[in-house]
Amino acid sequence: MANNHEKRLKEQRKRERENQKQKRRQRQMIVISTIIVVVLIAGIVAIVLQNINKNKTAEPSPNAGKQTQTKAAINYNGQPMMGQADAPVRIAEFGDYKCIYCKKFEETIVPKLKKDFIDTGKAKFYFINDTIFGENSQLAANAAEAVFHQDPKGFWAFHQKLYKSQGPEDKNWVTKELLLKIAKETVPSIDMNKLRNDINNMSYQDDIVKDYSMAQNIGVKGTPALYINGKQVDPFNYQEIKEAIKEAANE
Ligand code: CA
Image (cartoon, rainbow, N blue to C red; front, side):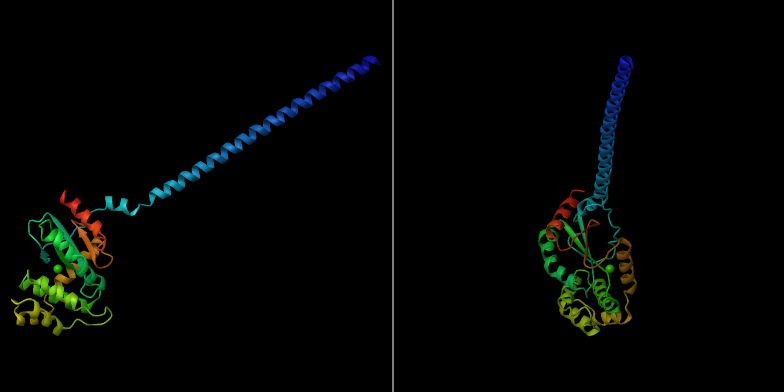
């Protein structure tokens, strides 16, 4: 009996030891599983964060875009130019005589450009028609081109006065009479009969269409659009314009 009892006790202890072993194993498994889950979660979080960062850098910041921006292929030939022919930097404005912001650009930014860069021989300024307001804009642009072909230097006085005479964008304020009157007042050398014929015949319509196509080809989205040696800048940010001119001068 005693032997039997001892045997049962031994077996009992053996079972208890095995139970404890199993419990330890279970605890170890729980710890290992927890570690695996934590590592997996950390891995997933790391991947998600990496992707968020990737997306952030994939979206170019405005400044980064400008640094890698390709230069617009602008054809300056036959465009009105203000300044010295040997000035190293080319400033080009795409504008429309009916565009109110072009008038604002003409009256607020151009005088600064003239004083700081054009009169000092550092840059030359081109005006290119981008007739986004249709036929009435084309009439104005045709007259301007006609004046330019008669008197390339006198053109700028006509150009300024035409902006000064600007009416509302949604009204057809450009008339042949107004164009002739402005030309007579601003360009003493003008041959009025020739100008009248050129306006009546829209003689420079091909140039207007070419200018418009060029603006489309280089991706002009609105007027005024401003380029410094082919690099687009904000036409109303004079600090940015100045820096772009400085940069272009060192090219
Ligand atoms: Ca032109």
